[in-house]
Image (tube, helix red, strand yellow):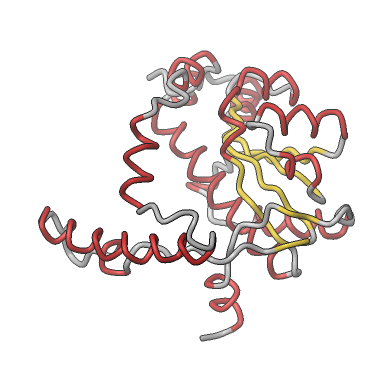
Length: 249
């Protein structure tokens, strides 16, 4: 175990922050670290929007499901899949790149590039003693988010990253068992094996919630997932993505 592995394995989401903004140097370091992440074929199909305006942060917190820490964190970053600059490239080079820009493949490149950059940003922030929390809630109302952030066509906000000085840290949630995530040579497809491992994981998660809430909660992971997937959520997404000029081909 080295310092970096310890940092990675010690991750937990932070949703309570001190009333203290990040310095410009910290912000630049986090963004520079994000840019150091791998990017498919050097396409760099993402952008990061830092939100400092108090009114905008308040609106984003509301649109993300009234998550107050979005408004009170030290700095709020929004990671976007971005093929807008490649539309500009097509104009500069006099080549029609629309079909490629609007393909499902390039949309996936944007998603992956943004996710890789964000994880670098998160690790950079945590290495400075800061806390972070990813915020997928911004996808609850992307029309509203895009209006606040003034994003052009071919740009889609994917998730936020709240960063700040932790006022309180949560306990770390136990992850799925190693052998349930890692498959060697081929995908393990035995339903019985899956069920055995998930039953064991259910016991772990139930005990975690029982201890964390002093017995007020003891639900299992499979219960959580079944309830979550049962509720149809953000079903407008495909239409929205295509409205923004991506995933059309």
